[in-house]
Structure formats: structure tokens, C-alpha cells
Length: 265
Image 1: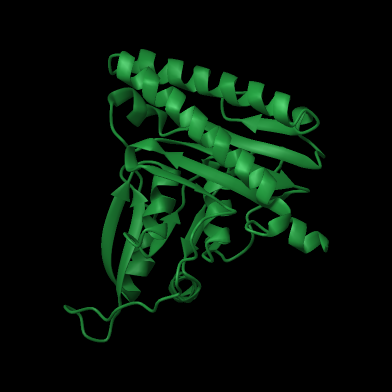
Image 2: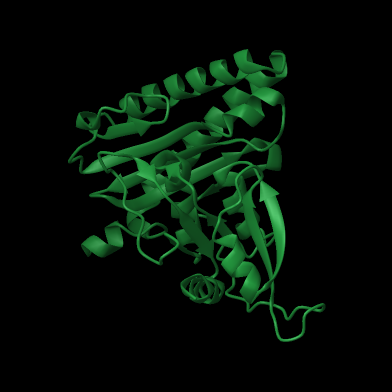
């Protein structure tokens, strides 16, 4: 078995870890759903959800994978805890925590495994969308071509999922090349699932995330046959001392190439 195979989301070599990621993401989603059902909307629900989900995931990973390192949004940001780790779990215990606190359905749980700095497996749970997907069992997404715009001859129609509050500045370049319809969502995992389900053709983000925001969504997207990169087309690194992750572009391969060309001008 080659090293490249080990490091590929969706390969048989990572199936066991993907199954664990799915189990933990699903269980954490159930924990959070139960908390939501017994609490009132507000910051107390949000903060309790962050803390309880983090404690559960860290405890379970310590029990199930005691030799692996863990990077969690709610944990320590001291890079000595993961620097040089061969196997690193990157988790967002509650992606979209403010929405969870307010009572929206746009929140989820991310669990990803990185091996030697590259994505190996991941799972995303979004209970409000009845979604639980992982890099071992996700259905492949056909690389369908874009449909021509019915309103602007000579241009293709493109559905782009972006942040509700912070649409990327690069959207202007995309709008010059395509007939764009915006699909606004409020959490990274929710946006990735919109592409998986065909609700959007591309997930475009800039302005900053962190590794825990996009590691699991990227792993699932890659396993489904989508291209998942930075907006310049380069690979997204993981396990960095600074977990800041500036931007991303997730789409079907043909769409990814077309959008990348538009971004490059």
C-alpha cells in the first residue's frame, strides 16, 4: 500500500478512521440536539453546546485513539500539542455555534483525521438537515457540466454558496464570468453539503476560517470526487502552528476549473 493511498480520503486504507469520525460526529450531533431541546435560545445554550461537545469528542478520541493528537476549536491553541504529530484529529465540536444558540438548523459537527499534514478521513453531521456524511461512504458526485443561462445567452448559470454575513470579495470576478445565483448559508459544513446535494455548484469562501472549520468538509468533499482547494488551486495545509485557513474553493472538477479560471482573470 502506497503512502499516497493512505493519505487519500475515501480510500480503503482510511475506512476505519472514517467510520470512527462518522460515529463521533453523529453521537455529538445527538448530544447537541438533546441539549437544544431542553434549553432556551441564547448565549448560555451556545456556550454550553461548545463546551459539552468538545468534552465529549476529546474524551472519546482519548479513549479510542490514545496515541493520536487532537486539535479542537474549544481546546488549547498551543501548537506544541499537535506540532509534528503523525496522526492529528481536527474537530469543530459545534460548527455554527451562534446559530445553534439562536435556534436555527444551520449548525453541525466536524471530525477529521490528518496524517502527516494531509487529510485522510472525515465526517460531517448536520442534524437539522438530516445529514451525516463521511469520507468512506459518501456517494460520488457526477461531474456534470453547468447549464447555460436562460437569461444571459453565452454565459453559464452558476449557483454559489457563500456566507450569509461575509460574502467573499472574489465573488465579483465570478459574477463577471457567470450568471450567478447565491445560495447563502451560515456554516462551513452546511455549505459543503449544499454542493454535495446539488443545491449549489460551488462553495467559495475567503476572509478567513480555521482548520477545524474546513478539515472535515474538505475530506468528505474530496472523497465524493469534488475538488477542494484554496482559491488559487493549491492544496490546503493542515496541522500548522497557526491554524488560520484563509480561503477555499469546493466544486465539481469541471466547475472548479472554470471558476478558478475566472478568479485568475
